[in-house]
Each structure stands twice: as C-alpha cells, then as structure tokens.
Image (tube, rainbow, N blue to C red):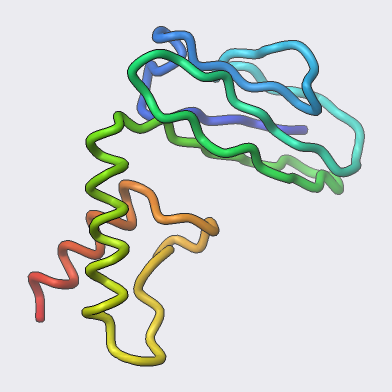
Length: 120
C-alpha cells in the first residue's frame, strides 16, 4: 500500500497531483493498493509553484509513506542560498543539510539550519 502526502496542506486544491510510472493522475488524498515492486512517482506541475522532483520508490509489503513538497519559487531561492551558506559555514566533516534524511533540503531543513545558525 502507498500513502502519499503532498505539502503544503491543501495544495491539491491548486491542482497538485501525482502518479506512479506515468499512470493516471491522483490527488493527495488517495491511497493506492499496489503490488510490490519498483516505481517512479511523478508530480504534476502547477502554476506558481516549483514541482517536486520525481522519486524512485520500492514497495515491499506493508504501507509506504511518501511526502513531497511543492514550494513557491521565492522559498526555493532561499533554500538554495542557505545551502551555499551552510557549505561555507558548516564545520568540516559534519552533516547539516538534509537534516530529516529525505535526500533533499526542504523547508523543514531550512528552518532547522536557521535555528542551528542562530544557536551558535
């Protein structure tokens, strides 16, 4: 089973959708009962938002949870700036980016980075 969460909340009202392996589009509220295997989750582009990158997923029993975040362009620029600043600021050999280990820096990571920098 696959449970998808699209962020921010209610982004599906803006037209955000996703699909598996280029199949039918689904909104954020749907749960898929799919066979085990490898899939690629694609996200539909919507005006005024940066679209999440496609994600590879492996379903192997149980429920898989996927979260994807649509971001306004100005927030994406802020996060990219934070990434550059953190590469300069972060001590050698420490891992500051991708603080929630989802293989990308997102809004939650950016907020944690700002909090970390303010704590120093």
